[in-house]
Image (cartoon, rainbow, N blue to C red):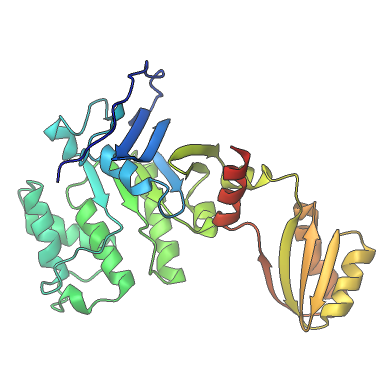
Length: 321
């Protein structure tokens, strides 16, 4: 079924931002539903994180960047041209979609070979082997990808996106399903690619991952660009409310008393061996909590921020709009 968008009054586009990927006044509507609304930004070499809850428009924006769908208004330039109209530039973009659309009955090598052939790579077997080696998968493993774990399937998709050595990589939730060791390796690999001059746009819903992905963050909420910058700076926008932190420790009541006595917290509640604290000076609290516990002979088992998650940042940003 053909896409339909309601009539819109054309408005002058904003000035094009610099970057290998330029998104200029982009709006995308599906019927009465506006998925993306007047989004403008530029992305250069290196790793940039794109954050947004489900339904925020991330995947739609990625599809527009790759030339798979057209915006209702505005334009996207990849390496200076429109990927929808320029076939050559589409060959310089690598996409690892969030959807798991692998051919379950073939090996990883065969799947990535097919991707290479589709993209016009001449020595497709050699390229497929090199791409699988980059993501630490055995090209000679005969098992079908249908038997792979979620993390291994993610790496197969990434190898297929890399097989033609693209200049721009669009990676939709590529770390989902990876164990902590695999995530660390993959994030380090992304930075290697970025340091080599490639442009990577990586979507994630985990702030801990974003902290390691890089300082450049684009936040999309309700189809709009809600904020840009370092993810810590985004959390610091919430300076009108204290940070809430959960602590699991032996001697929770004694620790709570010490934190109050030393003015490290503004409020505290204790339940069993856990305490939840509020603090307006999270940096001072972070520097002091381990030393305080050590002085009291208390073992900390877990220190977890409760409001540094992505959803709370989104909630705050949406409320501010």
